Image 1 (cartoon, helix red, strand yellow):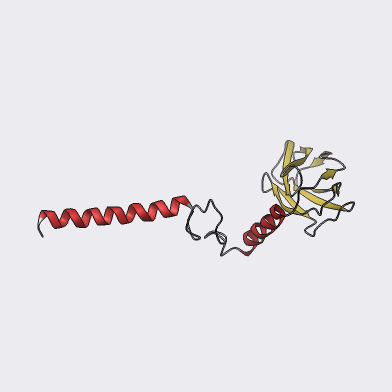
Image 2 (tube, one colour):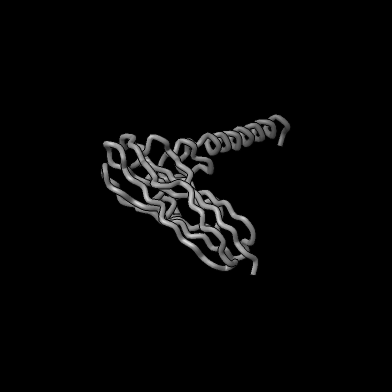
Length: 169
């Protein structure tokens, strides 16, 4: 092959790779690695039904009017427990606004804390709860954990949490 043909082929190959990289990184493709515009389900979410459900609930909540979520408490103290014990606390909340409330995700800061929550729409004046369970296995000492609550409230996320002193075995 002559040098001019090699140069043309190398240029075409380079432009092709550049175009693919640009589409992937811009998020325009629904299967892009970084889908910043959330077009479609996004490549990472299509194979994980739980992540797809969270995304669907988030979209639903963002389409709803903002409302007011009020917690009876945002911080709880479990006191002192022995290492290996599991403790739970229900954080009660109320829809203090005029529109329906949807808590679409609750995210714990680490694997030792497991949240479960009211996943149905909470009508104005009604209550719901977020149950937070802490597993103290291999967690001696003072622990201060936070959980982020995402909803269509006036504040998109609210931090709730707890403190606990874990006595070593």
